[in-house]
Amino acid sequence: MIASHPRQDDVARTLCGTEGTGDSLGKPSKKQIKPTKAARTARKLVKWAVGLAVVALIGYGIFQTSGFPFDADDLAIVDFTVLNAAEQRTALRAANGARCTCGCGMTLAQCVATDMSCPVRDRNIDRLKTIVQEARAQ
Image (cartoon, rainbow, N blue to C red; front, side, top):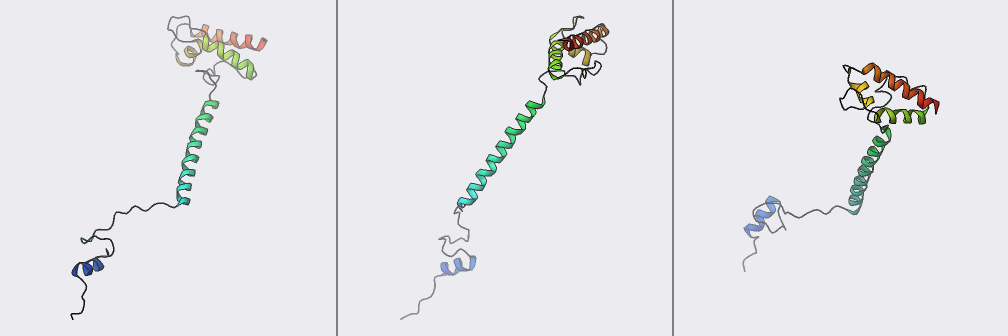
């Protein structure tokens, strides 16, 4: 009786580190490693946290805007600090709703804030001051 010798394929698998994979060419197995339940839960929590952070940032950005294209900071040539918050909203609504009279198509607030060469700029500034006075009187 002949002593049993390992087959050459088995020796090759053992030397290449692929023993038990069924691959005689030495390639590693393509088995997918399934993440643990804790890892899946952690990944899900991170996704939710990132999503909530994005929503919070969007909400913060919306609430930080005044709601007017041109606010009191843009119209610094006129003093809005004499008004309380409600009066400021009223004055800014009127300034952003009124039109410049030179025919440019801009609002009164836009014209005063951006167009230094408007031929009726001084009259527009006076109109803004009047709007502030009227808002304060209410």
